[in-house]
Amino acid sequence: MSTSAVSASGLYRNFGDLVAVDNVSLDIEQGTIFGFVGPNGSGKSTTIRMLCGLLTPSAGTATVLGHSLPKEAEHLRRRVGYMTQAFSLYRDLSVEENLDFVGQIYSMPRNKRKDRRDHWMGRLDLERYRHHLAGRLSGGQRQWLALAACLLHRPEVLILDEPTSQVDPKTRRDFWRILFELADDGVTILVSTHFMDEAERCHRLGILDHGRLVTEGRPQALMQDLPVDVFRVSGPGLRDIEALLLQNTAVRSVVQIGDALRVLTDQGTDPSTIATLADKGTHVERVDANLEDVFVVATADEVTA
Image 1 (tube, rainbow, N blue to C red):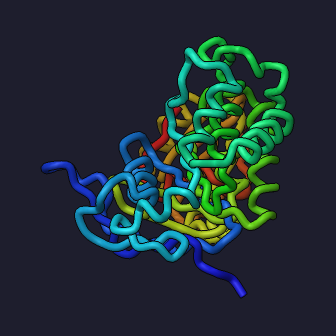
Image 2: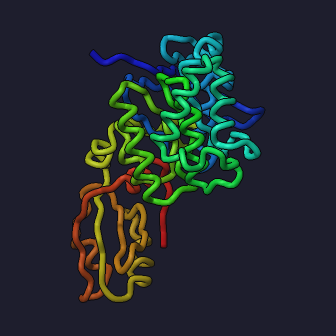
Image 3: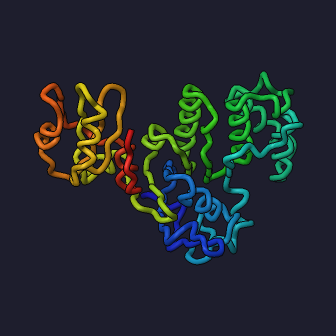
């Protein structure tokens, strides 16, 4: 039977007149990778900090692993790993020294600290950088170090704020392989990201906009249930075709991808309606929605080339 690891009801947070998080409610099952996606300033990091117990909600309630926040945040600290968006370890300490320091913060016995440190240095390909200063590591190596530090004390909930924003595609794939292995072991993972391919890998996804949770669900279900039609339009004169399409009230957005336009329209739009706006050489075909389309519709953005 599924167990809820993270619950939030009516979370609200303001900073003076700025409403950063507005009535967000969540229920995340144990062993789930839950993704937060949204524009800059949408409230992702603020929501994450409230769920870590680092920030007090202005209103609403949150429970993580049975602990009520922020009242029981101190009891939760040893059960949660939090990886911040910016690298937050000491750049003038070596990889080994940073991990030893983190282990001491968690009051880990020396032998256990050494075993866990060596395990994660080997598992995350950090052994060869053991004595390298953190400040001299590449962006990807620093992210591996930050992840190792988060995992040292065996957290039951792992919270990652845009963890792969500075790494190459291969490192991102390797990073996600580790996350799935952790989820298989029962670790609940909350991750914020700007990458749609990363968001698609999550078990469940929430899209935030202006502090509100505007849609939530499994990525595949969100794409299948999107209440729009999506067309691929190719042919000569794409700039002129785009201008004509944007004059049609049924058209939600147009973006050029390579040598074709991707067009989002109101549901039920006849492909011939799109074709009549273009020259005879234009080809129009209906295509499946992707997660970027979900994001565009959910945040009511108009994307143009």
